[in-house]
Length: 189
Length: 321
Image 1 (tube, chains in turn red, yellow):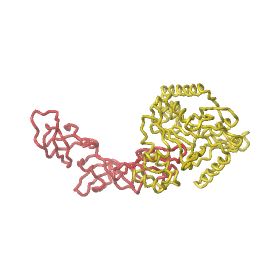
Image 2 (tube, each protein chain N blue to C red):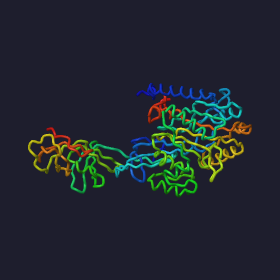
Image 3 (cartoon, rainbow over the protein chains, first blue to last red):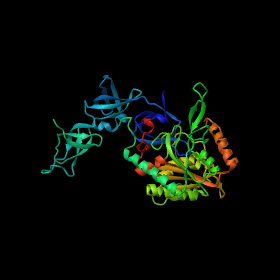
Image 4 (cartoon, rainbow over the protein chains, first blue to last red):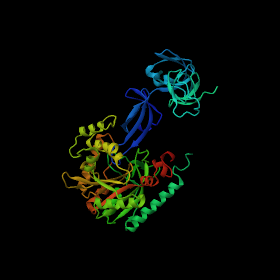
């Protein structure tokens, strides 16, 4: 297995730390005038999403993780597995709760996602930044409200609950930002 | 930006030039003599954690190479001048350190180093404070002894704390370290960089003085309970800016410290280099009672320009040379 010395590690590199695949956020060289050289490494655990800071001695090295990101289409799910197909190879992947995590709230059949594979196995799915989803449940709006001050909750076909303006009605299709989980606009046809 | 272009903006280079002039005016007004000493010498520092960059010299293209070293600081040569009776001196010089590249480090950097005969480290701290007030327009520096600093920021008694106490402290403060450190001083320095330095308030420079004797470097030991090393360091806004000593004069003690360094280097699997006998001869001849300090010019310019990366104030940083 290949390793990277602390001095060659840059943001974006994929490493195995504590047996988990991680992506480097940043790596700062710390050297007190008369003291030992350190590297202060910040990395995101790709499985848990947590960002961790850990100090290494500058001479240390860390194993590289065979992590790649591929384009994949979401096919269907049954509540226990979520099935995707790689856009390029047509290979299919069945993901479970742990891997789909919060992304499942935004998945609609045929939407284009990013799958992260570690040693060929999926560990993470990222939905498109913007998705169009139908409102399946919301209270009737108040007449006259156009821009929406407070808004109201709405349940979407994918299961997510977002706040929408009062004038949007059940059955309409809206555009949502999956990074923040916020309503953007009515979906354009 | 293209790699041929400077890493610093022209406005930063102008500020750098202004600061260089201010420093020369400051020392000229005090009658401190500007000197230059060799950048390439037959040996270099023995500190376990300072690596010198070798430079190879040949008397003739067909002769064998002689190993010289780019100097990590002008300290030994300047002390030889002091022993020769030059009086107060300063130098603005390039210094070189192997492997040091980062947000606050460039392997080739500029150091301001000066020596004042008749000064102890407190008198030199006064002078350093005046220089910082002039260039950075700072209020008077806060002064704190090393022991008080550990007590104030971490409630640690630096004289009695064991390695386990220091480890427990790091753990309690949620500081993760991969692996272990090899001695007590390494742990003290680790806690200092990770937990104390970031907590210094940013309104004034911090002068930390009277270090544990195990971190004396080239400082004399002063009596006390316990004895301490007459050494100080300067910190401001997350940047280690300077390191000074009330200089050790005793040649025998100095030789012992070099030998200890070399033992430590061997134990760490590092190369060893010859002890600088010319420097020791100068000490035998007699170094005047004096204090000296080295101040990083690049970091001073970073503070003056509020830059966070050393590349922003260097004409060409290490990625462009």
